[in-house]
Amino acid sequence: MSFLALLVAVVLEALLPDGFFERLRELVDRFSRECEVDLASLGLNQREHQQWLIPVLMWMIVVYLVHGVLMSTTPLLAAIFTLVLLLYGLRFKHFAEVFTSTQLFLNQGDYFRARELYIHWVKSYDGTEPHVHGPDELVSALIHHGVERALRQYFAVIFWYLIIPGPLGLVAYLAVQWSVIRERQRVSEHGLHLELTSLPELWRTNPTSARWSPRQVQYWMEWLPARLVALTIALVSQFDEVLLAWRNAMLHGRYSNRAPLTAAFLASIGYVGAGAVRHASDGLDEQSANEGQVMALQSFRQLVLKCAAAWLMLVFAMALLGWIPNPLN
Image 1 (tube, rainbow, N blue to C red):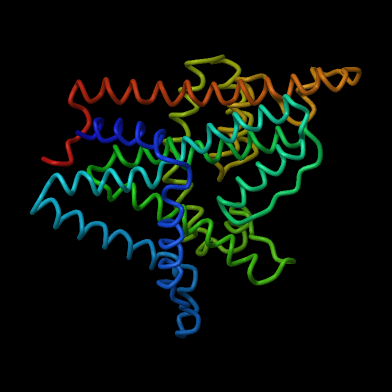
Image 2 (cartoon, rainbow, N blue to C red; image 1 turned 60 degrees about the vertical axis):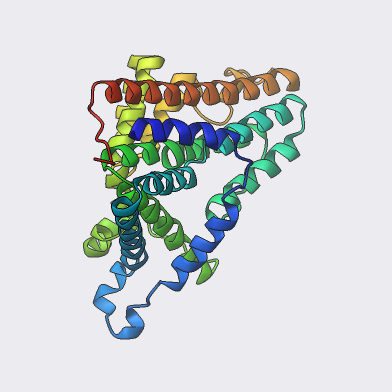
């Protein structure tokens, strides 16, 4: 049943128009902000670093109660409810469309439209407006952000949907992800000169806040999915190169799953950063450079599609063997 719901969700997500859940996402974001409680204003300064847990727990309780009531009355409605939540979390179609459109723009030499599409894509995700200069930097930034979106809007969503029967694991992950983005937004709202303290720096200066940080919780929730994706990349591409890139990146990013995963993707497609698509030559003409940039994006998109297909086939095999729990039992 879990695999069938997942398959239906993947198919529907590809067929539904882009932005189908945008209005619902705005309502969820607004309601979550209303549920925020400033613990410092209540005199609980020592608990201020835990206030992000309130919206997360609220959503988990609501979903648990609604799903429990539906299961006890009409299991079919409970399955539909879970399917809607899964569709809400998946954003794979948007990912594929952005990379396809960017490839088209760069192939036509229209860098400015490609940059505008990228900026809009990032802004719709966390409200930030990145600055990129030149096609090479755009390709590098797009791949780095694409890794984050693929992990957090497809692979990790599927993982937590399957690992815990019902929608509770899925909702917990989505709520923590919202809290991470919200934490970044709160810092920017206090002033443009402020920057969010990195997680390694937070561990050095304030271990208690780091331990309860939503980014730390997200790190642990993505620890296994990120490594499973990296293993998938290695199996469908160059195993030795991917493994070496992962190990090297782990030496410089202890509290990051995205950094080593990005390194694995880049090693698999043979792209090592801005300027690499010029094949280590400064004498290539503009047309050759554009071809290299388009090839890098195409290789990355195809690799993500291969990994997604591999995951679906693996889940299908596990369902046949009865290794995936049935949420209706």
